[in-house]
Length: 247
Image 1 (cartoon, rainbow, N blue to C red):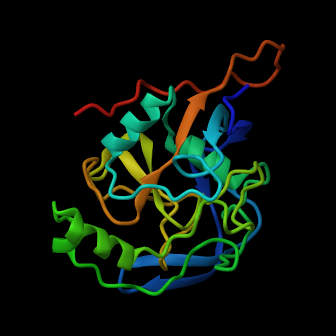
Image 2 (image 1 turned 90 degrees about the vertical axis):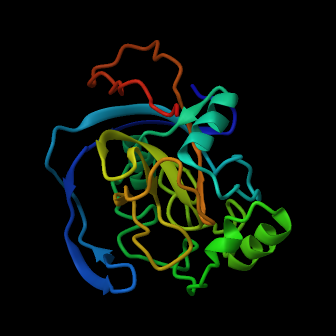
Image 3 (image 1 turned 180 degrees about the horizontal axis):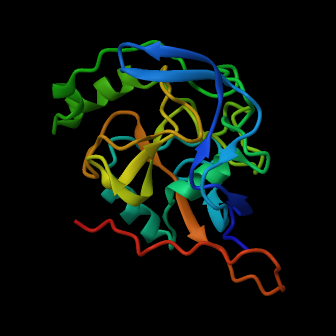
């Protein structure tokens, strides 16, 4: 069904859901509300649809123990996936892979848990002049100082019910948005990174333009699954609009 190293997913997912947060925190520094625990179940507010696709088991370059690149734009991610005969994941595909067959708000369950995924690390003040410096001798040491990521697959509990690793935490991941919104328009960032942010399956950051790069932003790739030759009785898989990604 899928190229080697990719996970085949065939599931029903809800485009818009209502989740009940039973324990939350307002993070003043980032001006966001972080949910620490959700009630079981989700209320589907729109008609569910079938998602049938392939997704990389790990962050790019999809190798256990690898270190994903950072300082990549959404354009960089699109090009890198295309070079492998793949494509950037759609937001709904990323969510489906993260929630797993049990439709969980975190890939590992109902409660936020830094023991499972690489999250809640202390803040380190970045020097923007250094991380955007053109001289590698200046940029490199600053990126190393700021780096709090772990190798892909190192957090064994950070895996969804479908067997996809490191979807929340570790690094933010570019995805394709299915409708334009925010400054990012056609792109968005999923999963949060290693900090104390909204490291759950549903939230998406849309405040950055596709050309934005940062020290904790990376991506993973998806691909269309091989055609289903068996007779199916379920809904026809959702077919997304053509992908953007060209400057």
